[in-house]
Image 1 (spheres, rainbow, N blue to C red):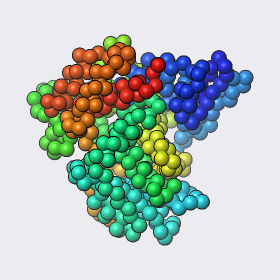
Image 2: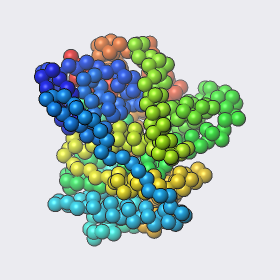
Image 3: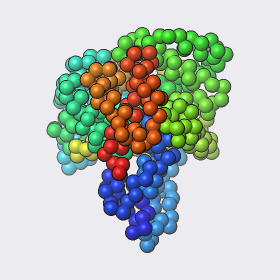
Image 4: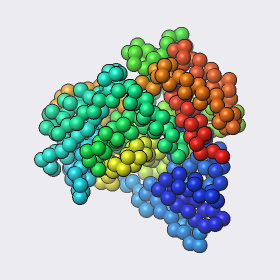
Length: 474
C-alpha cells in the first residue's frame, strides 16, 4: 500500500502502518466502502482510506521527489497456444504443476502443507510427496460442529499419500475466541468469514513449521466454484425464469447446516442470477448487497462494481477469452488477489507463517488459461481437466467427494453465543457515525434470528465493518 502525502511518499506492506502516521488522513473512500458492501472485500487498487492505494499484482511504481511519475504493469497473463487434445492439456498441466511444487519446496527450513482433503490441497501434497520423502501435513477438526468438519477427508488423503499428518481439534469455545481476536486484528474491513478457519489452521501449523504449501488458486484457474455451474444453469433456465422466481418467494426457511435449508438458500441464490443480460448474471454471482439495497443511504445505488466488471470483461475479450474463460480471467484478476490470497496472507502473516501457493505460478497460469473452458467445466463437472491430472495421484474418495466449504457455524452462533456481541456492534455509536440505516440493519437481523432468510453474510459484513470502525476511525 502507498500514499502520496504533503510530507512525502509513504509505502508499507500493511495499511495499519500508513494509518498510524500522524499526517495520514483517515478519511473513508466512498467507492471502496460501496465495493465492500457489494463484494464483501475491497479490491485493488482501492483501500478503505481515500488517500491510500494498493499496488495491483504484477504492477510497479516509480517515485521521484515524493510523487509517482510512472505506474505500469510488468507482468501480464499471456496464455500459450491451446492444446490439441485433453490428453495433451493434461500432460502440460501436470508437468507445470510438478515443477511449480518443486520450486515452492525450496527453503532453508522444513516445509509443511495445509491438507483439507479437497482436490486442490490434496494434489499439491501428492506432488510434494513426489519430490521429497517426508512431508508434514496439517488440518483442523471441529468436533463440536460435525457438519463443518472435513477432517475425515484429510485423514483419507494423508493415509493414501503417507504424510506425517497432524490433526488439531478445535472446540467451539476456542473458535469463538479466535473470532474476536482475528476481527480486531484487521486494518481494513474484510468480510470473508473463512478468514476465521484460515487463521485457526495457520496458528496451529505455525507451532510445527515456518513455511506451508496451500492449494489456493485451483478454483479460479480451473472452474472449481459452484457459481460456474450456476451461471451455466442460469443460461439454460432462462425460459423458466418467471416460474422459478415465483417458487423462490415461497416462505421456506433457509439454514446452513440443514440439508433442506441449505438447498433453499442455494436455489434462491441461483434464481438471482436468472437475468437475460450476461453482465447482470455475472454481477449477481459477486453481489452481497445489491447497490439499491446497501444499508447506507449515502451509498445506496452507488454502483461501482458494474463498471469494474465491464472493464475486466473487455480486457478478457481483447485477449480472446469468451464465456467461462472470460469469467475465470475476471476471477483471477479480482477474486483471487482481492479475496482468497489476501485472506491467506492476513491469516498466516498474523502468526509469522509463510504460505506458498504453487497453483499461482506464472507458468501454471499460462497453461491453465491456454486450456479451453470446455475442458474445465464439462457439463456440470467442475475442474474436469485438473481431475484428469489428479487421477494419477489421488484415491477415488478424494477425486469424487462433494465440494465442501471452509467455514464454521458463525450464522448459528449469531443466534446463540455471538448474539449479544452482534447486537451491541450493529447498534453501536459506530453505526451512527458511519451513517448506516438502522431500520435496514434491524430488518436483516430479525430475518436471520427468525430463520426466515439466512442473512449471515450480510450481518457478518456489517459486524466486521463496525468492529473495524471502532478501532480505526477517529
